[in-house]
Amino acid sequence: MIPKASVLIVNYNGREYLGKCLRSLLNQDHQDYEVILVDNASIDGSAECVEQAFPEVLVIRNEVNQGFGRGNNLGARWARGTYLAFLNPDTVVKPGWLKALIAALEADPQAGLATSKILLLADPERINACGNEIHYTGLALCRGMGMGCKAFTELTEVGAVSGAAFVIRKDVFEALGGFDEMFFLYMEDTDLSWRAHLAGYKCVYVPSSVVYHDYTLRFGPKKTFYQERNRYLILLKGLQWRTLLVLLPALFLAEVVTWGFMLLQERKRLTNKLRACAWVVKHWGQIMRSRRQVQAMRRVRDRDLIARCTHRLAYEQTGSGFIARLAHLVFDPLFFVLHRLALALIWW
Image: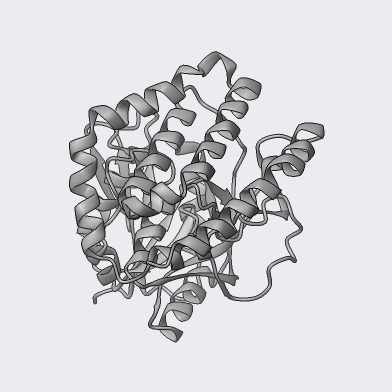
């Protein structure tokens, strides 16, 4: 029997998490789905462990770590379901999580992607993400991070889904071209959501779908490189040149913010920003080819995309105390004014 949904998990050395994740997945109120694990050349025995303990799970092995996006694209090619559910290996799902997401998509044909209420596994009374927000300079933020679990009780449209737990119609995923494999790591969910908006689909947050995520904010040696490079990719692929020209003051201000963050939090890795810029220059031709493909799917004006974005950055998600309060005081009014000015000028 063909399953209604395919649950896809990309794993890299996540053996300590997979047991809890898969047990929660296989203990649901309906079984009309398959589970596919794509293992990105783990060296901790993850694939062998899953094959032995969970024979009902299809395990696909990569010989090298191909990253989050390419791993998920590979899993999607094996998937038989009408819906694709993407799930992080360090999550535990609550019964009914998948059913609620699919129901939201079935209720609204314009909704192409649906994301869960994601709570912190270590502190279930606190939110990890209720969808993501996109700043109009391309920066992505967890919506509601750190707030109480009873917040955000209404099904609503959001700027982006969280890659930790979301569902997309398979035909929409294929029409969008899947995940962009240039990204390798970080912000693939933001890019996919942005392209979905560009093609005329909505991303919705479904509060009745609850997932617990073992999340801790970490800054690895290359995280800033990937995040900044991928932010540039989203903007270069998704917006018209004249829009980017109008946004130049705001984009410059975003550079001030990100460089400031690097100086305060990542001083030893300042070269990550420069490496991100250098990568874009080196791969300009590849980026422009991807841009042409993305723009060919356009059904929505840039004005609508920018209007959907937030002007406020949650500085407290990467720092706390005086610096975060000062950043809000200084930058919030500036980004607000530049956002309103952009909307006044962008009518395409």
